[in-house]
Image 1 (cartoon, helix red, strand yellow):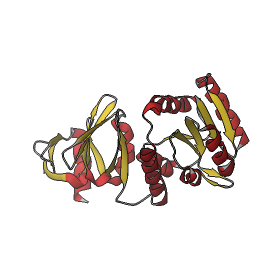
Image 2 (tube, rainbow, N blue to C red):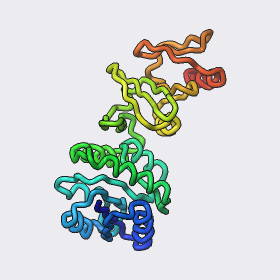
Image 3 (cartoon, helix red, strand yellow):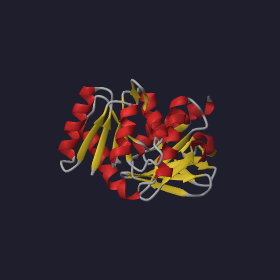
Length: 248
């Protein structure tokens, strides 16, 4: 397995290389210090996994990706971006590690990359990069898309088309306006943090709903009827907060 680290900070490259060698001791590890040297190295070694800095002296990681003719590698961004930008990575379902690099988080990202190598798809990666770049350019746009990854596929979904989410242990099921569902192996807590700024509200331990899809709130029964006809319970402790939101 071949891994390429592209970062213009020598100390970050050194730390990342040390962690990678401990996590994947059999891997061949290469380094590059910028967009141009990175492009040359990608062309030469054709890496299986690319660990890529976002901001570099001679351009950005996006500049590099756009210049790769057929990106078939697994991609993990190394970023110093703030929380708003980190949300963009999560919306795009692209793995990332925030600087300074944490070995445990890098280990999880690399493990996901290794498991995904067999199913890598350059057209899907291109869509994810496009979605990520769009989010970074328009962090407060209402018509956002989110990338949802199940065992076999990555789905690109309009946030406005998500009616509700339900929790089942470490999994979250998304219910969409077209009647389809997507089961994702992430907890609802992660999606609650991501979607709350976009008119979502967690009405129950097991239910996160899109406020735009509420059709009826039965206060006496403490449940909601959603636009797809489904009924969602409202926890007693959430009832007052929901009423305040709906009355605003």
